[in-house]
Amino acid sequence: MAALNLAGLITAAADTIAAHAEELTALDQAIGDGDHGLNMKRGFEAVRAEAEMFAAKPVPEALKAIGTKLVMTVGGASGPLFGTLFMALGKEISAEPDRTNLTAAFGKAIEAVAARGKSQVGQKTMLDVLQPAHDALVVGKTGSEIADVADAAAKATVPMKALRGRASFLGDRSIGHMDAGARSTALLVRTIVEMLERQP
Image 1 (cartoon, helix red, strand yellow):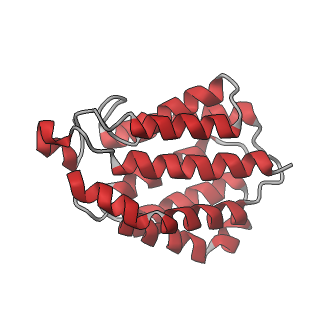
Image 2 (image 1 turned 180 degrees about the horizontal axis):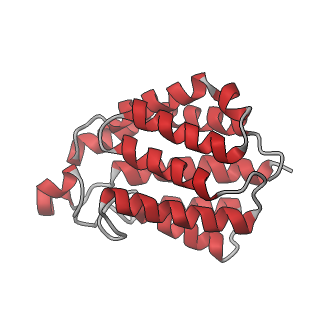
């Protein structure tokens, strides 16, 4: 992981979000504001536009800068949450992270997201994907296995009742729909871990 291809990761993440923007919007229209796909696409395109600049920085500084850019460009509730994830990751990660350091940094970043969103696992949010992905990382699962865990975790938000965010206003009517933030998180987890696994 020392030779992290950050520009490649940014491009892949932006491509993934762009490809799924309509799906994310449809999910959010069911139980949210209906702008998640558009907001996420705008934010990741803004990051993509400066990919080379981010990639020239040390990993911790790059992640913090990406987080700041996402806060400024994603908007809605997701901007501060995804931004916090990357900024906290940058704060905790080393310049040449190994799996142990990445796992620890990811855990701290999840805690930061929970604090920022005043939420916890089981409330139908992105945390319901982040925590299982972290647990899979802790026990040594492969990238594709972690990606599968993230996908399953996003699907597991369907029967949940939303207790945080806009969807919580719907009460029982939020049941039966996948959380858009959980889905976008799962998409990003798959893209990133599969790319990391392919890198030497």
